[in-house]
Image (cartoon, rainbow, N blue to C red; front, side, top):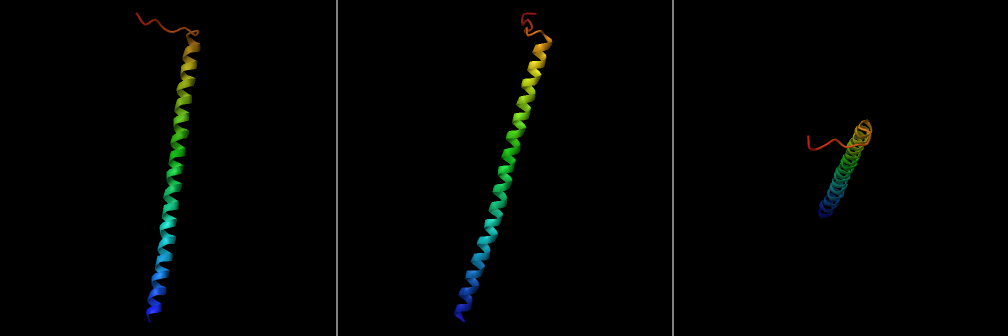
Length: 69
């Protein structure tokens, strides 16, 4: 009778480890994906700002506006 309790406890531990491992894997995957999208978004915004600055500079002929107006 005691052996069945030990076997049941072992089975519950194994199932628990599998479930916790699956949840941890899912959370890690979500966090890595979020970081990836944040990096791509920051690169797009920085690239847009760079291109805006280049376009604005080309319209002025490469000259900066006077600050003392």
